[in-house]
Amino acid sequence: MTNRRGFLCGVSGALLGVGGSGCTLSPPKAASRDYFAELGLTEFINAAEPYTMLTGALMPREAVEAYVYASSRYVRLNDLHDAVGKKLAEMTGCEAAMVTAGAASGLTLGTAACVTRGESKAVQQLPDTTGLKNEVIIQKAHRYGYERAVLNCGVRFVEVETREELEGAINENTAMMLFNNTNDPDGRIKVAEFAELGKKHNVPTFDDCAADVPPKEHLWEYLNMGFDLVTVSGGKGICGPQNAGLLLGRKDLIKAARVNAPPNSRGIGRGMKVSKETLLAMLVAVEVYLQRDHDADWQEWERRVKFIADEVSKIDGIKTEMFAPPLHYHVPHLRILWDEAKLGFTAAEVKEQLRMGTPSIEVRSSPPDRIELGVWMLREGEDQIVASRLAEIMTQSA
Ligand SMILES: *Cc1c(COP(=O)(O)O)cnc(C)c1O
Image 1 (tube, helix red, strand yellow):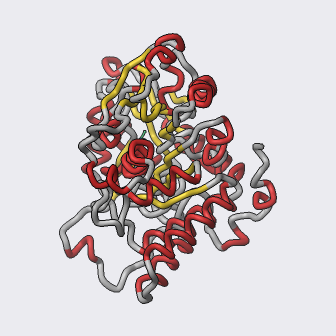
Image 2: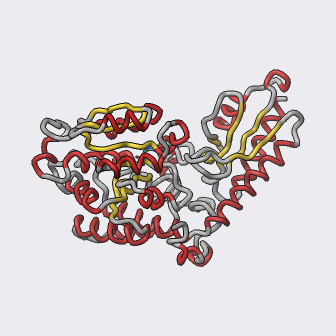
Image 3: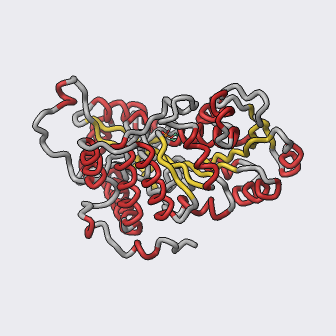
């Protein structure tokens, strides 16, 4: 199953005209109007992650072209949703798909689908769940910030820790079982067992994989494992529009999610509109993403990590290590460590200087005693800038 998309994998990024690796990697062109400067905004180098606060990832040129293409044409929104969904399902090998206004929106619409099953009276009454199934089972270790997007549907969580507790918690009010994929290592019930339990008891299971692509296989692996729904952010690893996401899974549930979404003005998701431009750009972003040479991307990210590590290791007392988080942002990163008392400067000071300097540089959030860099959002040549700024700051501070 890992090679389902194998027929596409031979096509290299270069063939498609995608420069370098990662998302859009060429440095920004001089614009005819410098809009951010006009607004008095400072741009920065993203040595962090595709964080929402940092405006996510950059789109490949092909996705931007699709966005512009759609911007001067009319098309019926439902027809576009149908066509894009069908194409996405084909490309990912899943039953059905839709573009949502981000993964958080995917969580809301997927939950609304499980609660209402697309039945029009139910759709119109949410978040009032009177007379509807309104319990969502979640492992205690999987509670997280984005759960709010699920609770918006008027459901309540039933917390469990063990398989026995989970099976005991299922009743006629159970609407769905929610899995927060990143927290898989923390829960007692692992991902495959969770899916299996849903199947056994005929309860829809939903896996939030928002930041867990790459690897690309996560777009279908969990569905093949037995999950009924999976949501992924558009503007993180896939490098689509930041206000897009994917909801993938069972045909009847995707259909029900659509009833809760625009253009239906009575659905709970009416405020989660996805424009034709975003719909098309997201489709093309997924196309480009699936056709990338993912091994070459990984090697390029490792090269950047090593390059920066080599530069800062020249400074006495600086230690570096390469690491890849197991699920969330599963790509090569750099960790920089030193004895703050010995060297006489703190990681917090270095981060502040990186941010306040020219160019401004953002790094990943980490424990306070270290600096951690993500290199996959860097544009061409920015690894060198990050390395020399770090070396400069550390040498001057020491
Ligand atoms: C980022 C994230 C979300 C929200 O995704 P958006 O695409 O920004 O709406 C949801 N869940 C998890 C685990 C995330 O990391």
